[in-house]
Amino acid sequence: MNITKRTRRALLQLFERAHRNAEYFERRRKTFAAVAIIGFPLYYFIWRYVFPQPYESLPLRLIGGALFLPILLERHWPSILKKCWTAYWYLALLYALPFFFSLMLFKNNSSVVWIESTLIAVFVMVLLLDWITLIVHCIVGVGLAWLAYSLTTEAPRLEHVTLIHLPIIFFAVVLGTLANYVTEVVRLEQERAMLATAGSIAHELRTPLLGIRSGAAGLRNFLPALLSAYQLARENSLPVVAIRRSHLATIEGVLERIETEANYSNAIIDILITNTRLPKLGHEDLSPCSMMRCIRIALERYPFSVDEISQIAPVTGNDFIFEGVELLMVHVIFNLLKNSLRHIAMTGKGEICIRAVSSSQCNQLVFRDTAAGIPSEVLPHIFKRFYSLPATGDNILGSGIGLAFCSEVVQAFGGTIECSSILGEFCEFSLKFPRIQS
Image (cartoon, rainbow, N blue to C red; front, side, top):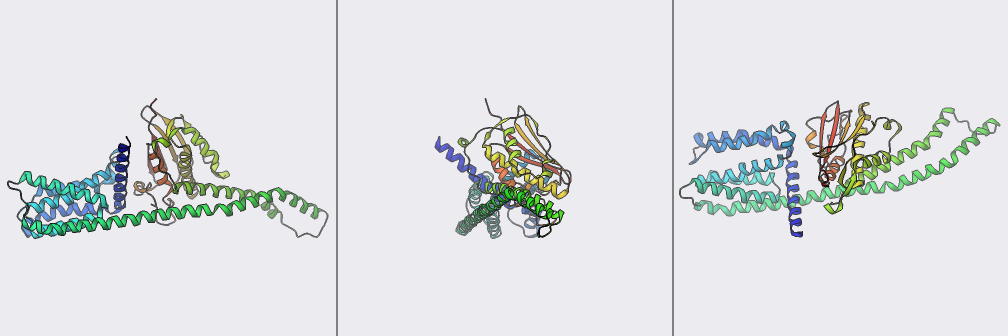
């Protein structure tokens, strides 16, 4: 049983690594797809008519180009298919690089042109794949290419020239694997350092905030007496410095504002520290939680200003039970509230609607605000850690930590989180949780 769990966890980690590597190249994926769509048929004519080679296949090249057409039109995929884009991306690369180039190398009797082309394919794989996926693609792609070659050739054999160049190709793969491994280690260390720094800064800010809150609380006890003494002194014509009425009114409300801002800052620090220190959760760490209770706790604990409270519509829907961690779910709602309230403040309009929905298929929390919305080209990236828009006056995203935290928590609970939006109209997050089997 333990071996099965370890194997499942290892496979999940491998998939997460591959998914994150694919996300890293997401902005350049369309460019690569366009090159593949044009390059596959173009080089058929080059190797067929301009510089003829012993073997060429238009169907194989058309398949290669067609595989990348959906990637070029990725934004139009149905939402249910978008969950499979990582697997599709790697399958397309498997065909286009190790399989196709190895098969053409075998079919062309290991000609110099195809040996050079294969080395270029290895170079591109090193750029696009993490080290583990690179090894898997090489083994599977070359293996399938040899199988296809054997099935379509009367007397399949490895040419002597191929054997001579195999050490060079093998060295290129090994060197690329080592380079990618080192790059990944450095990137992970940089990410850990950034998260640790953010958490440390947030933690260190607690001390001065505590001093501010304590000082404000002490002044609150004595300020009324001091103001009363000032009024008596003025009424009895004692020599005291005159204070304008507007300044007196400001003094009376300043302590409340100081305490409110300190409480808000402490709450934001709590959110930041939790976002940067999400523990690894196993099934044994989860317990039945009430969604309505999580919503109620979040709304009670969040440091709303007077104006912000009026922007929260009454919570609607039916309560449901999900397997999770109450504190983490509360912080998920904190992050959604913080983002929505920032958008409302930026646009000067909108309200927040929270709805819990329980059905026979799944349980769902719907969080919607009618403020700025999110651009369609940004939507696919909002749950990526550290993703944010460039710093402009229209920037509606933050540091790229909060929504990534929300996604990681909901997935740890066995659920999914999706976002739909129309720019300038609304932004809606849908958090779906599996039903607990009774």
